[in-house]
Image (cartoon, one colour):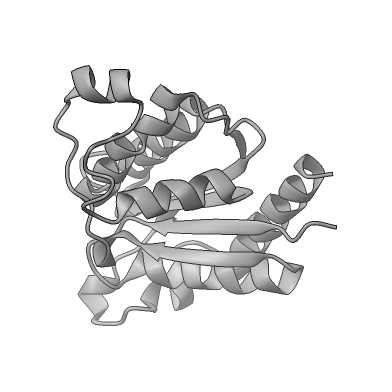
Length: 198
């Protein structure tokens, strides 16, 4: 059977909640048997989309892809089986880093790259549930526009910056039994990817 590969994309501009949570999800995915790729957007060079659609709509590629990390990321996205998208919440939306990633990956849609057999889950983190819900909705919309299959979504409360502890979200009681939720998300995503790859 084909080895399942899952890409975890972290939209946080700093080390903190999102990375801590995705590291745990990655651990559970590996226990299930998946190969993983944890992508920290803050460590990547991703230039902003300049809206030059007269170029990309005609040429079917972004002229920036060879000059930053996005070309390699797009190739990995096309080859992976599933995704976990995680971002902190900024005014009910994902971070600017994640938005740059979203905008630049629109070339996959323009080129007609088929992502309909890929599964995804989303995690939004912030300080109040209504705002986090807006962030999660944006992340889900991104996956749906590409035709991907949504498996799970989580809205998590986290304020690790206040406690000077990058892993505070993992020990906080604000999210109930968080390890159980993350394990379930990982297992369900892995199982869905297996079904899609039979």
